Image (cartoon, rainbow, N blue to C red):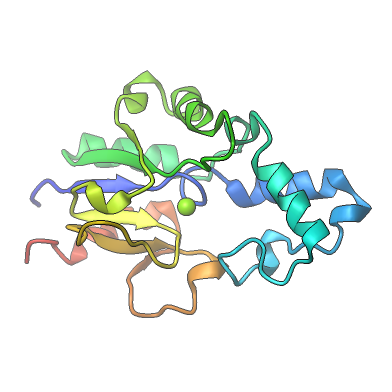
Length: 188
Ligand SMILES: [Mg+2]
């Protein structure tokens, strides 16, 4: 097996953004009671179907300092990253910050160091344009990823309710299956 460059998204792939979202909405109580919980979400846009007051709750939540530092980890992510690395692949974490949150970028780096270790902090790329990062595969839950360049990577979905309407891409349902992404060599 040739070594591959594998790019791995963070939110919804390594960090359990959905769990944090649901918990934060629950804490807010009645004002947030009718905002869609993660298991109900089929739209990527968090403001889909929300009125102005609900949209303000969403904005305040996503802009809260420290919010991104406290996300739980998704099962199996850490082990999969280590296996990829140990089997000779070049693995990078590629994540886009919520730019209006003043601590999001530094929180993301702190999360990686805390959950994965210092060496992974040095393998983390924080960018708002993932097409500028070269690689063979990008494992990401976002339905569509666009940017300034034609991507060199194959976008493989990390399965989420928000990306299930697109059936054209390969998808990873759980981290223990990560080797299946190598079934279609990128250079073939
Ligand atoms: Mg994501």
